[in-house]
Length: 69
View 1: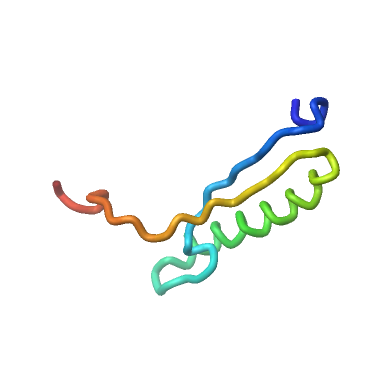
View 2: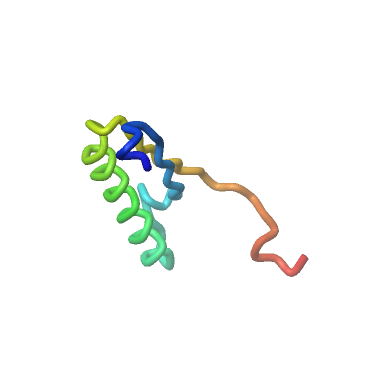
């Protein structure tokens, strides 16, 4: 659909751990590093088709996800 319309936008959501890593977070960071590379390559591949590609890298957000509450 994007190609036939020659326009569109793709948004990928990564993490700040796609730019750095910490002990114990290696696999997660590797996944996010890969998404960074994929997004960058995809953006270059589809630019001539009028398709934009962006990557959102949210920072740390405090949640109760890992608590018993």
